[in-house]
Amino acid sequence: MSSPHPSPKSPAASGTYSVTETAEPSRSAVVTRLRAAGCVFAEDEAALLIAAAPTPDDLAALIERRTAGHPLEHVLGWAEFGGLRVAVDPGVFVPRRRTEFLLDQAVALGRRLSGRTGRHIVAVDLCCGSGAVGAALAAALGGVELHACDIEPAAVRCARRNVAAAGGRVYEGDLFAPLPVHLQGRIDVLTANVPYVPTEEVGLLPPEAREHEPLVALDGGADGLDVLRRVTAAAPRWLAPGGHLLVETGERQAPRAMETFRRSGLIPRVATSDELYATVVIGTRPTDPTRPTGTTDPNGTKTA
Ligand SMILES: C[S@@+](CC[C@H](N)C(=O)[O-])C[C@H]1O[C@@H](n2cnc3c(N)ncnc32)[C@H](O)[C@@H]1O
Image (cartoon, rainbow, N blue to C red; front, side):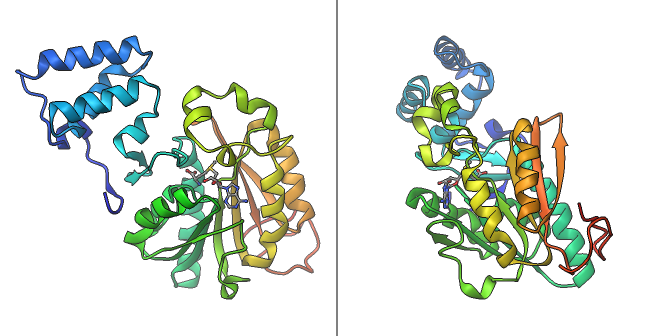
């Protein structure tokens, strides 16, 4: 797969191995094997694996990897995210359904900014992993100047494929370090789904994450907020006036993250989704840094 494309309504229906009446017995055998290996959604997964396998030998290899505990998305080579089918290579963080909430918030803010300014926004997806957030943001907004970066070479390679459709550029390195300097003060929407699991809790994650996703994608330090603090400290220099930084956190981490945003001079707020069990902290760079707190700027953003 070279670039993301809209997900088919039924992945099984789009595959090269159709589930015909004659294939039905092997389908139930696949379900049984997946179920025995502990796959909760064995029926759905069987349909996806069958659809992905051009030959019975390929199917056997996919089932082997899945029942050995590899994440379904790594076995298939893709994940569905924000209406796109995004390439996800082994060793790359699998985009989570809950992060679609961060995406929705970013899309809404991006639409508002481009509607007001009448130009394509500048979007940066920091800690981009597969590039899912940036790719889906660009697809939803239609036109953006998209940049993304990650410290992991495997993620960078994967993201390059996923953001290609949006003409995005992907850089490799530590947080903002590899970004071109000309982006300073110009970023309208800065998404950063940083690692935020507290170090002590990494061992409690499901084996699929612990054993198949890189530690650097998960471990956020003692309280989970180490990378978030570094991003937040540097963000005001990179954001355009009125630009937004969006990060996902755990529910309990949000108050401390808000305080970090505030100390960096960003105007923070929290958005939550009960349905996706998602918390997103959004910080806005004031358009007028001299404006006293408690007032409302031209964006309608109230200072804390
Ligand atoms: C939780 S994953 C999120 C990936 C992607 N944004 C998503 O939502 O699917 C965090 C990502 O941050 C990257 N990362 C961790 N520390 C980093 C750093 N110092 N600089 C750049 N990227 C970093 C990891 O390699 C990983 O891909």
